[in-house]
Image (cartoon, rainbow, N blue to C red; front, side, top):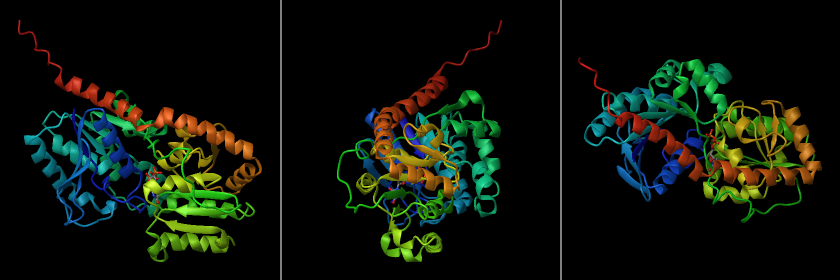
Amino acid sequence: MKIEMVSEHASPLARVGGPDAGGQNVHVGALAVALARRGHEVVVLTRRDDAHRPTVVPFAPGVTVEHVPAGPPRRVPKDRLLAYMHDFAAALSRRWLVRPPDVVHAHFWMSGLAALDGARGRGIPVVQTFHALGSVKRRHQREADTSPESRIHLERRIACEADAIIATCTDEVRELTAYGAPPGRVFVVPCGVDTTCFRPDGPSDARDGRFRVVTFGRLVPRKGVDTIIEALGRVPDAELLVAGGPDRGSLGRDAEVRRLARVAREEHVAGRVTFLGRIAHDDLPSLIRSADVAVSVPWYEPFGIAPVEAMACGVPVVVSAVGGHLDTVLDGVTGLHVPARRPGTLAAQLRRLLADPELRCSLGAAAAERVPARYAWERIAAETEAVYERLVAASSAPVAVADRA
Ligand code: UDP
């Protein structure tokens, strides 16, 4: 199949870890590569956000990234991109008039908007993955949510118009149903993990004898890193390494890092918390392997690739019992669940793991066994391909001619 992915702000070429570059960038790149390995031709269309980048960039065998001009050719925060989606859709429409793909897969709501508008009247099936839903974001972030006012309304429209929706966890299906998405068009396909890179064996970063807690991801308030810092005060002698945010050299200028450092001072654990800054994706496994436990306690989480990567490394995880974590972490078997925003409960689970090396071993081993079986990209690509094939078969099926008699 000729597959075109639309990912307006999240390019697989971006360096992940900053506020607008995380799981979606990893997902789009890895899914595209895994689909190409299955013999498909994949183009990822993303907004041109750098005037000096070539229009077409080869990414991997069978995968190219193409930059679509829409709005200024520089980085614009994603919550301000809606104004350029009309131009993005027009560019897609022109492109698909001459070279229609077999299927379009849009990632994030604004991509869905542009893809549906661009594909209108062309008979090209559009698959939508939201990655995050405005309704959930608004519920948790309230007035701190900087998404455009119209987001939820437009997401409802996409949910009703897309030919198929790929939800990344079962919890999302409930939200999509509330949006009015036709149940027969919603399929659950989780995100995947690079199990060749994230695996239990391999190098491990240096450490001393202290109990090491690691967390990694975009440094935004909803990721709950402050909860982990607050919990640390109640876990004697433990250290916390925080990966993510800007490069190490500019950590001092980052508002969220400064806020978290203040929390650490208030909790009297500043000497036990280290901010590492953004770590290259390929360097994360050796950091993770050096940890006794990986923690991810966001307020909400559409999927949460980070804890699955830690599990793939055989490291026990403690996660908030929200969103994708409810599918990926089997409580008491492949990790532990805690409620979000509850440092006391998190501290109790960390003390339990600190005191029980056998429990750490058994959780880590069970996780390392489950992840390659369930979340390897080959399997995720096969399940995604099955959704595409249904739509392609339906769109090319002969239309019954009415009996004129
Ligand atoms: N990540 C990274 N370097 C960092 C911090 C995060 O490569 O310094 C990666 C992490 O390994 C994961 C992704 O960013 O693959 C975060 O995805 P997740 O689904 O956990 O969160 P999201 O960014 O989608 O909210």
